[in-house]
Length: 273
Ligand code: DGL
Image (cartoon, rainbow, N blue to C red; front, side, top):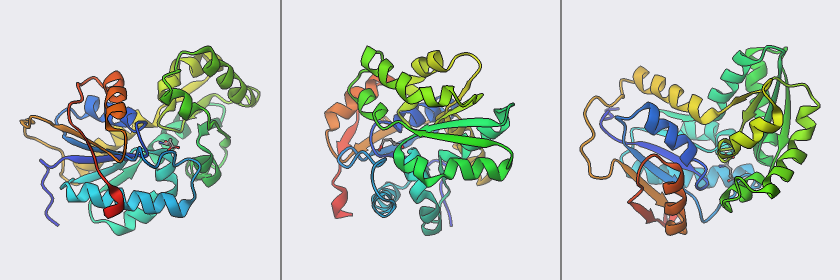
């Protein structure tokens, strides 16, 4: 198949959270164009079944392919855990998720061989982080904790609110007692609570942000496939954003976390795809 290295990268998430991944791609691969899709109408994915997350993800990948993307980044931990293996078999362009890069780094970083994972219920129940880490080193024990309230708190803009601190202390207490030395922020929204989580867990626990690791893995993947963009980006809108609902809300959130002024956000009806 002939893929053009000058084509954009497709990045998708259940909503705004994947912007933490897009942000790392913008920083680490500044020559790349991005088409981002946030499924804001159907968020959260973290409490949905595998079948539903696969169906939603499939529709989004189809949409991204209709936009001529050269590769797809599943910038959602839940979709990576539940749908990536299916999607991989169905498309003929490179695709990566966020779980594997995060698991790899955690396995490398832990000294005491005890890793914690915080994520949505679906990601924790999939056990994928544990499987991938133990594939690398079976002696590492992995403790998972679902933190479902973190997503709505971040979306409410309560990143620095005392309520969020109380919730975080309650969720993380269990992990503090487990003597972990590495903690994976296994949900796209959690890097936005990094400071708070770091304060609670203390200096002895290293936080792994799969978003950052994914941008490095993406660079490797594109290099392997000869798909790194070599030309200067000349388009007026190198980053295009699509959502399934509430485009204005998405735009203002995106503007608060991206190092770039989000101008083009469009609403798309995925049900027709
Ligand atoms: N983006 C999702 C994830 O990383 C969190 C939000 C949701 O539940 O859809 O798992």
